[in-house]
Length: 395
Image (cartoon, helix red, strand yellow):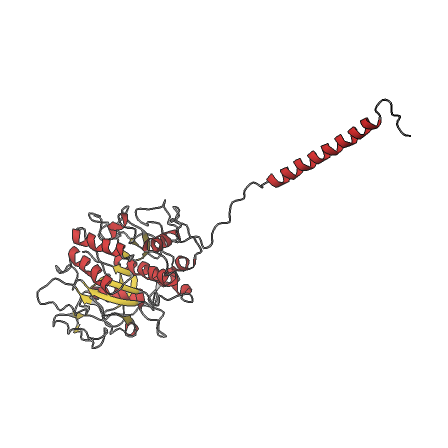
C-alpha cells in the first residue's frame, strides 16, 4: 500500500486523540498512547471544487439516505466541519492481537482526509465542503499508518465486508494493494451480488512498477467496481497515477486541499484523494436515481464524464473526468450502455429522420384510378348499347 502526501504533517504526531462521542454510541474506544497526529495549516484555493462545480447538483440531491462505507484508517470528528457529519457505527478490522474492533479513531489522518472530500459539511467560514455532505458515513479502520503491516489485502476484504454489513450501498476504498487474494476477490464478489458500488483508487506507482492495484483492477471482472486515476488543475493525469486497462474514470487528485486530522487544511497528492470525488458522485446518483443497479451507476458515471484528450477508454483517464452534475441530471435510458467516446450528453439525441410512409397514399391513388377506369368503361358501354343496329340513336 503506497500513499502520497505533500504535507508531512499528515503522518507526523503532535497530540493524543480522544474525542468522546465522535462516533455514534457506544463511543470510540480510547486510542493507544502513540496515536498522535498534527494539525493542518491554511488553504485559500479549493480548485477541485471549482473544477467539478458539484454544488450545482445540490438543489437536486446532496446524497441524503445513501450509506457510504469508507475503508481506510478511521475517522476523527474533531474537525468542525466533521462534527455534524451523519455517521453510522463503524468497525476496526485490523488483524492484530488485542486490537479493539470498536476502535475507529484515525491515528494516521488519511481516512479523515478522504472523508472530508466525501462529506465535509458546508461552513460559513470557508468555501471547502464535501461533494455529498448529506450521506451517512461508515468508518472502517483497516490500517493505522502508512506502510503499517496491519494493512493487508485480506484486511481490505474484511473492510469491504464490514461496510456491507453496515448497509453501505457505496464503498470508498482509497487504499490499494498489488497483491490480489482470494479473500479480497470474494469480498468484491459479495459486493457485486448485493448490488453495491465499490469505488477504488487506481494506485500511485506509475513511476515504479506500475503493477495493477487491487481492488481497483477488479473493474475488468466486476461491473460494480470503479477504478479512479488522478488529474491536476489542468486536467493532466498525475505522474504518479497508475495506468492500465482497468482505469475507469479520473478525478482531481494532485495538490488537493483536505481537512487536517485535527484542524486546518493539508495539500495532498494521490489517487486516494481522487476516489472520494467519484464515490461521492456515485452516492449522489444513487440518491437521485434509487432504482439504478450498481452497473447502471457505473455506466452513468462513464457516459457523462468529461471527454479526455485521448481515445477512450484511455489507460490513464478511463472514460474521462467525472462530472457530478451531468451524472445526476442527464436524461438517458437506464439500461443504455456507456458511450464509447466518453462525451457528456445531458439530453437524448433527437431521433433520426426516417423515410415517409406513402403506403396509404398509394392505396388511395390506386383506388381512385380504379374507380375512374370503371366510370370510363361504364360511359363507353352505355354509348355502345345506345348505337346497336336496328335501334336508331336519339338526337
